[in-house]
Length: 166
Length: 204
Image (cartoon, rainbow over all chains, first blue to last red; front, side, top):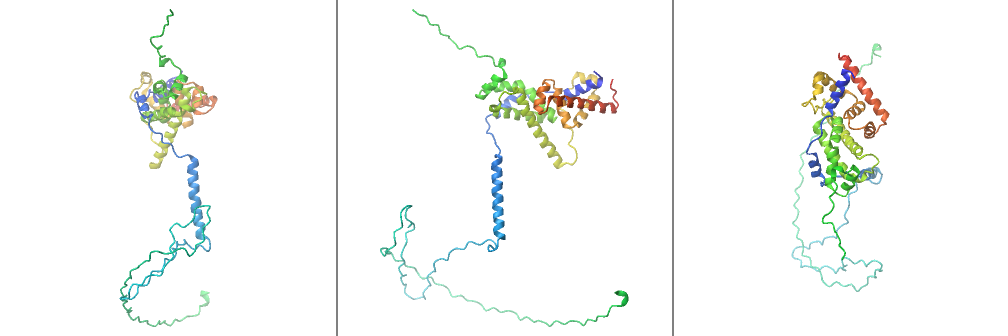
């Protein structure tokens, strides 16, 4: 074995020398009961990514489809018209009777809804106090007078091109 | 009258040091941490050295050895006994070491352009008497040249340098045929010697 071979062997042995930390066992045993942090399975990551991609694609499609100009804002159905306040001094008039519907008047599943008949009666009458509106004082719009000056164009003189410029 | 002799005490349990790895694995699977502790003690050095061969850093190798034993404990059920427990354990440690090495290199490249610095040698302080006798400077040159080798040559060379694993075991850890492993080790040594000769060291 040559000197270089011996040197290579010695260098390699030095590079991998060591028995590891003596407290390795204690460190390992101390961590054995730690909860395992498992990364999300690949199929779950792929499913989530696909879901996001589909949502983005649908959103983009809805924006570009004619008839869906922009995101249609959700329009609330018009609320019941508020009673118009009677002029001040008018005695409070009782509202006409409105047939009241119970909040959950839907029949249970499998049971046909019964026809609503005249048996419904309103026992209580609503009394609504008049709302007094202060008269709106709208100030007149006073715009300053705008003076528009007439455009004046300076006279332009156009000379024919010389032969050498063509 | 029939005399019945009952044992007054249970037979002494077999010393855990005499139990095979397979038996220790079976016990560890049932939650016997002492059995697992014996496995750690038996293979601590091999796992640490393999990690050290891949990373070249003592502190990184210690971390990887710890992670490898933890992973082995948690995956104990997946050990089917097709290879020796030591080979199975070394495979886990090697994979973890390579993962860490890739992370370290990519982290280095992210912040600094150029090649990563030479990792410090763990055994710089306690140089063997043999190395001291040969030539400390020559050994230093060899170590620098080893680090400069491509990983596919350096890794087999360092793993074989431990001298504790057979070619068959190391080939299984690296996932390459045994013949390929032998060729890579020989090629690595040939390149090292060529470069040393070019540096002016005579091959006597």
